[in-house]
Image 1 (cartoon, rainbow, N blue to C red):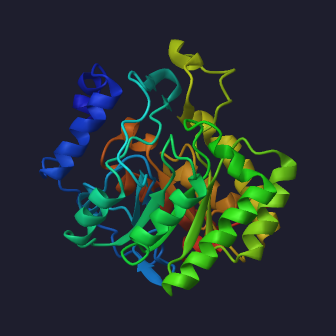
Image 2: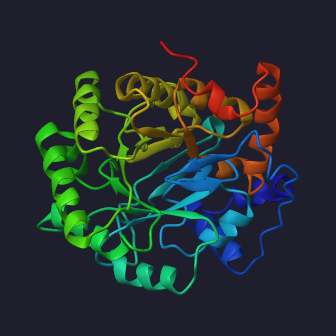
Amino acid sequence: MFSKFRSLIFKIDPETAHTLAIKSLKFNFAPNIFDESKNDPMFQTTLFGKELHNPIGMAAGFDKNAEVYNPLFKLGFGFVEVGTITPLEQYGNPKPRVFRLVEDQALINRLGFNSLGAKDVSSRIRSNTPDGLLGINIGPNKNSKDRLNDYLIGLKTFHNIADYIAINISSPNTENLRNFHEQTKLDELLNSIEQEKTNLKSKVPIVVKISPDVSENQVQQISEILLKYQVKAIIVSNTTEGNRENLQNTSKHQKGGLSGKPLELKSNQLINKFYNLLKNKIDIIGVGGVDSGKSAYNKFLAGANYIQLYTGMVFQGPNIVVKIKKELKKLLINDGVKNFKEIVGKNNN
């Protein structure tokens, strides 16, 4: 059904199309997905002590204001991450700010944390109990005088309703946000978060979302700090400011973060680097170019314990989780394994 409408949808401005997709899910206009392998033991796993039907998650950025997480669970996602959510409501960057690169199966966005704010999102989640594992991605306001404190506000607001909190230090669309990748700043941030968790008597798992544009030296430093604070998981990775050389679409030089297929190899290589350094002490959620069973398979081989997608659904449609599982199952059967976890990290360089 999606394939019939795709050409029409792709004539609409990408941000408008996204708004329509949210409304369709919100008012249950999206098709019911029949998933015959929902309880297939080949895909079953746990995340932060909770059982998942599958390791395929919706990445932050799709459901920014926590409006449609339950309809996304119905589409088959094993877990959903909402946000990025800022303490105060903000519009984000000026439009146009999303560009669809059809030939490249990619998006470029410079949204800049457009958010209804923590209070609005918190009340919405409290009034609509999640039907599955819900992660909440938090970030600072653009004009904040104390960005570190903004993360603490996010933690205080959501620690008792989130299954995990993702600390977004990696968006390229908020100026100087990626400075938090620096060793001393990341150490200070995670130390403050741990102190606040102690104050709140909170056990909420903390996850850090990393930029794909980090240097070799930063990968080592970041790994050491994540291990020091016993962070529960790392998301590898956010959108990239690079990787424009081989793109075909005329929008390729638009400022912003690139997501989709052009990010796949870079993401897999980075996952493998972190896998070798973290040595199974911290879970890895792999993101970047996931749109098929083969792309999911390669993420697991590189060392991801779970995967997320967003751009893949833009190009493949709402049936993407069922499609990935069907294709992935064939690859896993061919390997003679009983559960996908058996292949994690097998492509170790």
